[in-house]
Length: 233
Ligand SMILES: Cc1cc2nc3c(=O)[nH]c(=O)nc-3n(C[C@H](O)[C@H](O)[C@H](O)COP(=O)(O)O)c2cc1C
View (cartoon, rainbow, N blue to C red):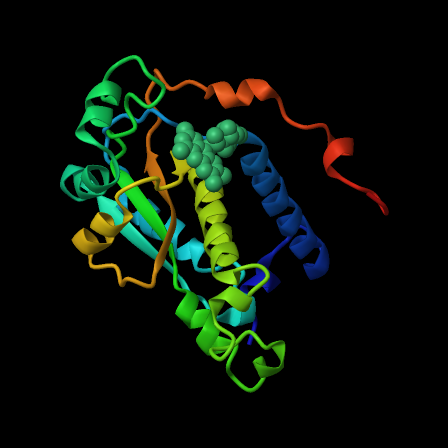
């Protein structure tokens, strides 16, 4: 049965064509990696739901230890849902000080979308109790404390990075930030199980014209040779 490739007339072999496509994709990815920066001020213009779903569905493609896939994403859209997040995790004093003023986060609360990245340690204890992972000694009997690196945090972080890069690719702004207070309230308000860990949140939306860089950026990026230890520290 002739496939669509038989109608191509540019004379390229299928392997060259695949290589060209792969090259094109990697240029786009490299571009997104280099352009990505955190956005802290958002316009309240809504984000296309299809794009949000596409971004979140790509987060499911992030790597996962033992393919345990213990990452959950809580999607909050619009002022009512995102308001639940801000009310639980910030004080009214912080909101008054920051909202629509001149501070760095003055239009953070305008972000039309907030995604909470959640990690379920139980999924990993369960997975690493299975026969093919049992020898790791990281299963239910050992408990979460036995893990030298909590893979549930690693996996949720990979998912978060995927979201940040996809946002850049879509021309959207995004800020990953930690949840400093109100975790218990947040879990209660959103029905998140007690054992599930909120690793951080991502505010997503169209960047506001007033958006500017954090003062942290003035520290400068560490030079390659300080970070990359080639063969020996
Ligand atoms: C774990 C983590 C927590 C962060 N928390 C905050 C935060 O609370 N507020 C904020 O404005 N930025 C936060 N950031 C963003 C960093 O300040 C930012 O990534 C860094 O300054 C480098 O800037 P860039 O990401 O724009 O390149 C956080 C980033 C990470 C990875």
